[in-house]
Image (cartoon, rainbow over all chains, first blue to last red; front, side):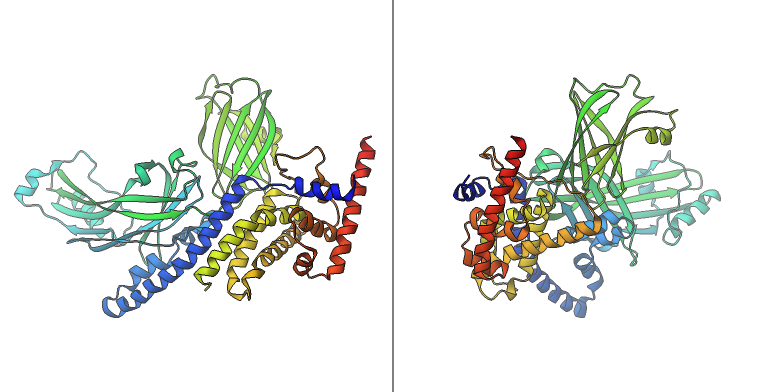
Length: 389
Length: 162
């Protein structure tokens, strides 16, 4: 082969990047340009803040929603969230102000959120969301209340703030009439995205900040519903409810009443981040059944699919006594926690694992059929790992 | 803060050059995943320094240079971590039977990059010289020498198979 042909072949055989690369870079450039615009907007909002400090002394609430990244707050105890924090910054924060005669002004807002096309995490706060007061119903009010079948004693969560609950429990034990009203702003369990897509949550963590405010981070089932996957942005909304609970003990019976009113939802546009995904593959066997295994790994989650090369994955004969155990770790020895039991569909078994905030280069899967009586440590020691790379 | 015009130019240049950047990183790192990460780092770093760039025309070269730097950083990290990356190269759909790029990725970097930039990316020797901070004569001789080495490597491999 002459050098001219060789030079031509270098051009002809140019490697092309995977399609996902093009999308990733386009998203990254879009984000960079938007980020700059958002900084401009933030400065003007901060300028507005200064005016408000001087006139309304509302700095605490505003600065919190604008400046504090709740992923970092939760990241103190969850390294994964700390890793995601820089990518969870929202370009715009639109808190909702609700007013009620009992609570005054309540500020609620989505503070930060992470969306990579497959997974979603949303952090939010509702400030001054709870207020209790002593309550003695009028005869007319008592007539409208229902006699309660619930236990009279109420669990005290925080003796510092639940003084009225302590007082209630004392009165109940002494057969002394007492009542209280609890006014709250609570988030809906449902989150929706554009077009009314319902995004099912998998878990929610709650913490109290140094300022006494309650912060929450909600994680969603991953992968998200198909309609919410791989969007350029998700327009999410979490509903809010104003709830008033009345409880009265007349010395003999407990009476209850509830009022619930829907308020404007917390909303945010969550742009998809240019997060990387890594595809890993391996070959293995389950009880002699050859399998090909693929994993899509991101910082947030790992979706593992095991595909049988010879027919369907067998449904275990006694699922209550036996189940598939999948133990996943990576090249750094980090172990991954499975999210749910996974799903078997014909020749495929799909399981999702919670990510660690970093993308693994290699995964090691130990796959065993487990039973209650089994010594799991011994079983793991006896099982050779399948390498995915 | 970069002007709107400069940001638009940046977006357009990245769009035009992203495959070149990918191939530069791939040739250095021999791993598609690492190459993608390196390009991403380079794009981020370049944008952060966009204000310091004197001429818009320098942006394509600056992006390639940043990608080379980001790839070197990955190589240094690999040395520290003694990682064992598997070569993973995506060839274009019309790849002939002889994957020249597999051989190309095996020769020394000082030949590899000029060869790739000259024949895959159609850059002139003067552009490559400016980009790699090398005299033009050196670039010319690296390209010529690189082609010879590549041909010899391929011959050796064919002889080994035959």
